[in-house]
Image (cartoon, rainbow, N blue to C red; front, side, top):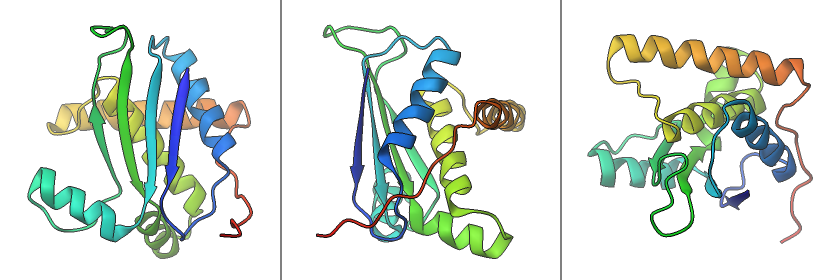
Length: 157
C-alpha cells in the first residue's frame, strides 16, 4: 500500500509517518482493497483555487476529495483510491476559534476525506448523519489505539 504525501504548506508541521499509520489503520479496519492514495497538505489559497475550479465556490474549505477507483477496482491493474486535499490553514483557524488542537482538526479532515474516497457522501441530511457517525467511530477507534497526528520539526529548506 502506497500512501503518497505532498506537503505543500508551511502552516502546520505534521509528521508524515503519523498520517501513514492513521490511514493504514483505517484501511485495515474498513477492509479496503487498494494499492495507493494521495494526500496533499495545502494552504487556503491552494484549496480556494481547487474549490473554485471544481465546485464554483472561491472560498476556502477544509478538505476536498477526488475519488478515482472504487476499492478493489483494478481496471489498469492498480487500485488508486484517490486524492485528499487538506487545508492546514483552515484547520488552524477553526482550532483557534474553537479551542481544539489543529492536529485533531486535520485528523478529522483526513478521516472525512478518506470516507469520501470509500463511498460515503454528505449532500443529503441522512448521508451527513451517517458520515458524522462514521467519523466519530473512526476517531474513537484511533484514540483507543493511541493513533493521532503528530507534530514534526520544521524542515530546513
